[in-house]
Amino acid sequence: MALGKWVVTSKLCLVLFSGQGFFYAVSWRIKNYIRQRRERMIDDMKEQLEAIRAEADAELSAVKDAKALDALRVKFLGKKGALTAILKQMGKLTAEERPVMGQLANEVRTFIEEAIAAKQTEITRLEMQARLASETIDVTLPGQKQSLGSLHPLAIVENEIKEIFLGMGFEIADGPEVEYDYYNFEALNLPPDHPARDTQDTFYITDNILLRTQTSSVQVHVMENQKPPIRVISPGRVFRSDAVDATHSPLFHQIEGLVVDKGITMADLKGTLEMLMKRLYGPDCKIRLRPHHFPFTEPSAEVDVMCFGCMGKGCRICKNEGYIELLGAGMVHPKVLEGCGIDSSVYSGFAFGLGLERVVMRRYNISDMRLLFENDYRFLEQF
Ligand code: DAH
Image 1: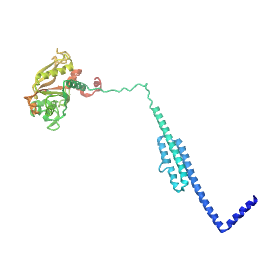
Image 2 (image 1 turned 135 degrees about the vertical axis):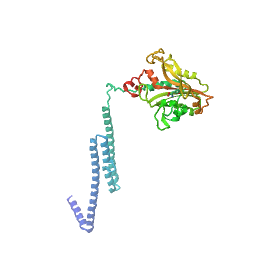
Image 3 (image 1 turned 60 degrees about the vertical axis):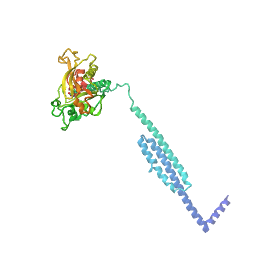
Image 4 (image 1 turned 180 degrees about the vertical axis):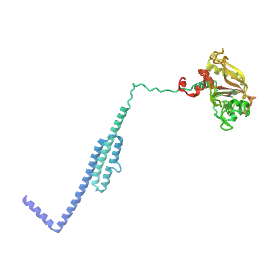
């Protein structure tokens, strides 16, 4: 053993002290130094990766909400994240070292990704739990009363009248509330100087355009656009420059009726209105036609309905008349038909105009028209 050691040492001295030996020794030391540095660099990278894994693990356990989790994802896996910074150093590695480091880096990435996903699931579950806890409903608590609206009495009766006429084969026509003088007056045989215009003063937009005073204007629109047979009603708002009182309002409602066909007579008018009133006020209701004048009908009539308070005997409601005036009606004036391009020698027609407020007031025994427009809740909730 002692002899062997001596032989080796003397050989080494021989190598070292020859010139070649010295060169070997130096280059060996340099190679050794480089190898050690590489190993240290790789160890460093490994340590850094492990540190990232540990840091992510520690921080993840402290995360409580989705926002913090997202910030953590960016910090570790983002483009400027810790892991990416390490991966950028991979270029310095040799072809043999790279797969080893790559594998470790991938392991760390997978670890962090899986941990984040698990945390995400947990956060979602916790959030859901919190929501369920905070949104529990005590079904035994008394409910909050929802106050449902109801139809206005004007709408209730208008709908009823529409139903009655639809049942008789009528259609519903509509017309503008802002109207030309021509449709509201002139085409209805009320030229500019006609005295009947005075009773229907209205609101003028220009000399020629006004708020309609009567739904009769729709008659003209319908006859201009439709060939007989015509059977329409047209409910709508009308306007007059009247002061407000118990029986007057600058805005009120009418329902116009128009029938044009061959052989239409006054009997058709009376039959139709009788049917309407019986449906509105009961089968015992009677109507009465009184001669009157309207420029757009000839002959014209005012139609009274039997007072439902006294059934025709006379009482306070009907001022002892037994009947109450409800609407105007008549046979369409030939001039109006001709003006709308309808041959009055072939066709005839009847028309009527019903004040909706009057019908509603009679129906519900309302004595002051203002109640219908004031929108007082105590009044409206009775319907
Ligand atoms: N338009 C009339 C008014 O407002 C009511 C009226 C009367 C309409 C006779 C008609 C009718 O269609 O034929 O006073």
